[in-house]
Length: 78
Image (cartoon, rainbow, N blue to C red; front, side, top):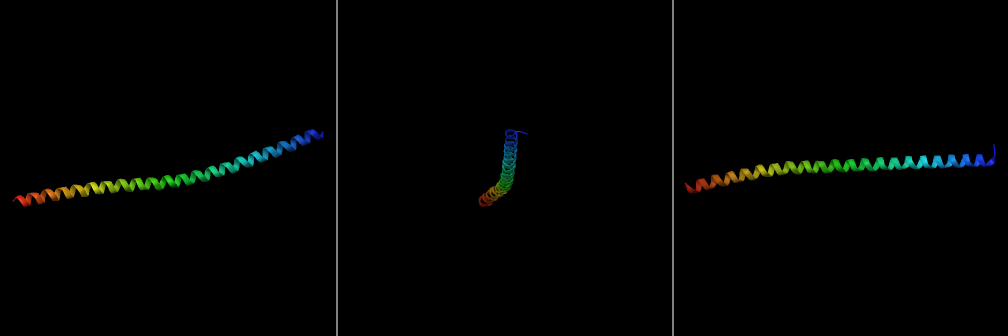
């Protein structure tokens, strides 16, 4: 085989291996970042759910306070 062909094959193999390695490393980094993002989203969703529950509890507490105020006014007028 002519030397030019051998050099071209070696260059091709080097380029292919380098590209493949770069793609693998890039994919691993994307996977890692995606996992980190999923964890952050899960934490955020937990905060949203807790906030919703707290808002509901506050709404109930405010309603109970309003009921007590109405009862107090009723007893004051008697």
